Every structure is written in structure tokens, then in C-alpha cells.
Amino acid sequence: MIASGRRRAERGSATLFAVAALGVVLFVGAALGVVAALVGAHRAAQAAADLAALGAASTLQERGDACAAAAHVAEVNKALLASCSVQGEEVVVVVTVTGPRWLGQTADLDARARAGPAG
Image 1 (cartoon, rainbow, N blue to C red):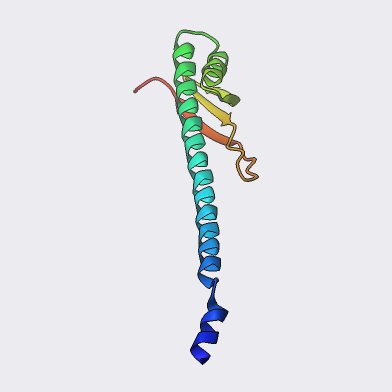
Image 2 (cartoon, rainbow, N blue to C red):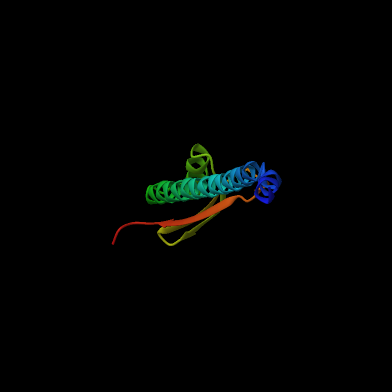
């Protein structure tokens, strides 16, 4: 008779455990989604910076406005040119990409790149 009363007291405990485990799985999934979005945005920022620096260096070799070219290339790649400096025959650019706005994240991501003639 004691065993029967004990079983009644434990009824529904598996449901509570399942709900708690599901909550943990959803939380971890959401956190991994944010991390994946941040990594993707950082890669997009770095690609935009690399392309902007290459475009600026190419324009500089043609005696054009390197920073204007960098701004245009960054804009085409959905980035904002944060800074551009010409150092001799090299161009250094920093671009900013809007980061994911999930779960309260508000960070924008920056990337830096440098390009110039070979040799």
C-alpha cells in the first residue's frame, strides 16, 4: 500500500521534466541561432571590407578618388564605410555591417582591410 501512494505522488513528474528539457533545448537553439547570425554578419563585413579595399586600391592606381570608390563598393555590399585612409600606394578601410537584432542583440560589426599593389 505504501508503494501505491508513492506512485500517486510521482504522477506527472515526467511531464515537468519534459517541459523543462524542452525549454533548455529551445534556449540553446536560440543562442546558437544568434551566434550563427553574428558569425554570418562578421563574414559579410569582412568580405565587404576586402572588396572595398581592393576597389579603392584599383581606383588609386588609376589616379581616382580611392575613398569614394571604397564607399561605393561598401554600399553595394550592404555595408557602411566607417573610415578610409590612403597610405602611400595602400588603402586601409574599415566598414560596418548591421548585426542581427535577435534576442536583444544590438551590436554592429566592423571589419578592416588593407590593399595595395603587389610587390
